Amino acid sequence: MELTAGQLWSQVLEAAKERLAEQTYKTWLSGTNAVSLTQDQLLVEVPSEFHVGWIGDRYGKQLAELVQRVAGREMILTFECAAEAPEIHFPAVELSPPAVGGAVQGDGRRIAPTRPRLNDRYTFDRFVVGSNNEFAAAACRAVAANPARTYNPLFIYGGVGLGKTHLMQAIGCDILGSAPLTRTVYLTAEQFTNELVTAIQNGKTPDFRRKYREVDLLLVDDVQFLAGKERTQEEFFHTFNSLYDARKQIILTSDRPPKEIGGLEARLVSRFEWGLVADIRPPDYETRVAILRKKSEDDHIILDDDVIDFVARSCTSSVRQLEGAIIKLLAYSSLTNRDITVEFARANLKAEASIPARGHLVSPEDIKKAVAEAWGVRPEALSSKRRTKDLTVPRQVAMYLIREILDVALVQIGAVFGGRDHSTVIHSLRKVESQMQSDLSFRDRVETLGEDLRRP
Ligand code: ADP
Ligand code: MG
Image (tube, rainbow, N blue to C red; front, side):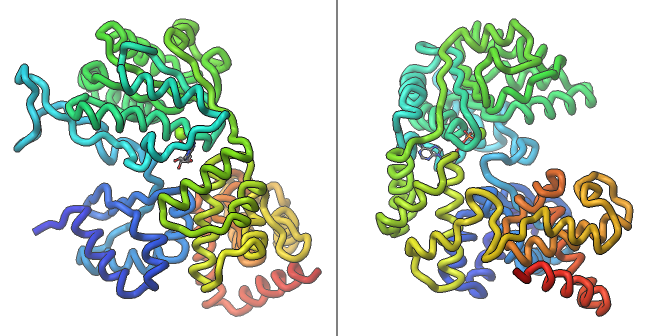
C-alpha cells in the first residue's frame, strides 16, 4: 500500500534518529513535518529558513537517501519554511464536505474546514508584548475576542521579522480554539495571486471566487505584494466587499501602511483603512531580552543572563534575527560539544549583524573578485543571471570559497550572487566538490586560490 507523506517521513525520522546524535536530532529534526508527497517528491516543512539551509546542507543527502530507501523509488526531498509554504501543497480550506466525519453545525449546512495552514506556535501565549507592539497586540486580542464586531478590517504593518504573521495567525488560532467551525483561510497575497492566475488559466475563476467569498475569517499576509497587479486587485476588491458585507472578519498585513503601498488602487487603500491600522516597530532592548527569555523557556533551552544580554545587544533588527541567533548558538554548541558562553556567542554570532570576516579582513566581495580574476571574467558577471559555462564555473567556485573561508549561511551566499536561492547555492557547492574529486588540476586551482585568500 502507498505510504502517506506523514508515514513515509516518520519512518525516515526513525532511521535518522538511530544515526544522529540525540541533541542534533532534537534540534534539527524533531520539529519537522511532512506536508505533501507526489510520485517523485516529498515536501517537508521545517520551523525556520535557517533550518532549511542547515538541514539541507548537513543532512540533506543522508535524509534523501533514507527517503528513497523507504519509498523504494527515486525521490526528491525538499525542505521549506513552515510559515512561508505555498498554499498549493495544502489547500488552505476545504469547502466541500469531507468523505467521512467532519463536523456539521446546528443548521446542518456548515462543514468544518480542514485545519488551515496556521502554525501552532504562533499563539498569543508565545507572543511577547513590548512597547513596540502593544497597540497591535491589543487590537489583535480585541478582534479575536469579537470577530467582525470591533475592527474590520484589521491592518497590521511593520518591517520584516517583527511578528506580523505571528500576530495574525494568533487571531486565527484563538478564534478556532473557541469556535472550531469558523471557516478560516490564511494565505499570502502572493499565493492569492498565484491561485487566481491558475484559476484563470484553467477556466476555474468561479470556483476560486466561491472559495474565498465563503469564509468566515480571511487572513491575508503581505498585501504589499498586490502592488501593480491590477487583475488580482480587482478580484481581491470583490472578495473584500462580499466578506465585509457579510460581516466576516478580514485581517491584513503589510510591510508598510496602506497609503504607502505604491501601485495599489485608491479604492483598496481606502478599504484597508476602514477598520484599524496598527503598526509594529522593532523591539527595544528590554523587549528583546524578554523575547529571548520567553523563547528559551518555551523551548527548554538554558541560556545564561549574560548570553541573553549579549544576544539582545548584538541582534537589534528583528525578532527573526534573535531567533536565528539562538538556533545558531544551539547548533554550534551541539556540534562542537561546547557550552554557550558569551565568548562562544561572540565568536559564533559574527555573521548575524553582517557577513563576517573570520580572523582577517577578506570579504565575500574580495573572494568574488579574486575568483573572477583567476578565471578571467568580470566580478559583476558572477552576480548576473547569465548561465554560460565561462561564468557558471567561477561563480560556483566563488560560492564554494565563500562558504569554505567565511562559513556564512547559504542564503547569505545566494544574496551575494544576485539573490540566488539556497538550493542553487547547495547545487553549486556540490558541483565544485565533485569536480574537485574527479579533476585534480581543478582541485589544485581552487585550493591554491583559497589559501591565497586565507593568508592575512
Ligand atoms: P513578520 O511576519 O513580521 O515578518 P513573523 O511573524 O514571521 O514576522 O515573526 C518572525 C519570528 O519572530 C516568528 O518566529 C515569530 O514567532 C517571532 N516573533 C515575532 N515577534 C514576536 C514576539 N513579540 N514574541 C515572540 N515571538 C515573536
Ligand atoms: Mg510575515
